[in-house]
Length: 442
Image 1 (cartoon, one colour):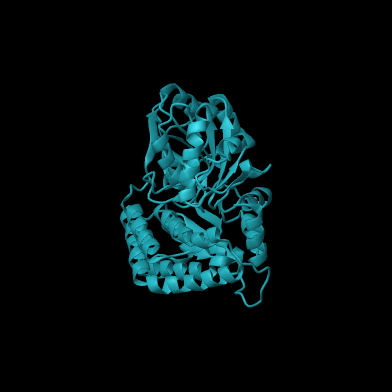
Image 2 (cartoon, one colour):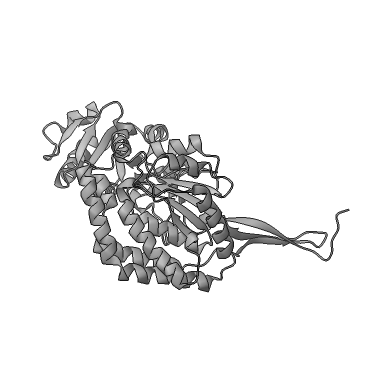
């Protein structure tokens, strides 16, 4: 998300409004801790029954949720939110059905809690094993994506974690309607509503309080723009998982299959441009630029994608732009997560230069190569260390559902604990279990 859009969201968010419900985060933290202790020993069958109950309730209350969402959309338009943000906020019948289906998929996945990661017997006869356990209480801060409310609640419950949610003010009605659905399902399953709590007041000072609730919260997961992640890193006394922000690249190698590469680029850029795994920059080897760039421009023109190109690329496109809107790239354009129908285009002389550009400008989210050269593909995979690296595939696949994880809490781009889509295993930690025959240490 660009800083301009972040500023718009921040200006639209109420600072402190007495009309909003007072929030006692300490009490919420205490309740979440108690709920996490209730969730941790649940059997897989009990957790799965609760998830299916949420899916059923979501389908039954779909009209009420979408009515609340329509009000959020109307307010967002009135406040001048971008089309990209409005798309992230929107709930449609198809998206609601998809949410219910995703919940049921998570219920069908293996439960990682209690699984033995490894085990061995020491020479002295002690039996050691590492066993997966819930993290405990999660705090998740996110912006204009109400589907995240369901994704996070689902994955948290499946892994025996309680969660405190703080969405953006622009999705308050939608999120409250979804939390109401979750609470009704939890009650029917005999589980505490405090397992999934929502910070109802959008006062931004509450974010800082949540970041410092280390007595009760075990991990913070931000989902939003670079500003939100920076705030969490700077202010939190709770461990923070960062990610979800990406300047994503595809490199067109000399050996690339042009027609099929265009299909991949189109999908990566156009299929849903407002999300973090959408394509931002195409790097094209100079040896194939004369042939490939006009084809790229024509395909992007069909999809109303504006190109921001380096001067050498502009010279090739002069008179061969296929009707595309093309302009010279600005100094910050190759460091911008566009989240709309804009695509950076840069020529490079070698694979080395392409890798160097990605290493300098990527945010370690999703980067790929389009090639028929096995050696170049291998080098790219070995030298580009993003959370997901692609060979002849769209960056849009960097997603928990697409990776078979059922859903995701976030896409982590950091290097500790979790990388890439954070599914069920990433919401667990482990404990050592030591079994002896009344052993004593010499």
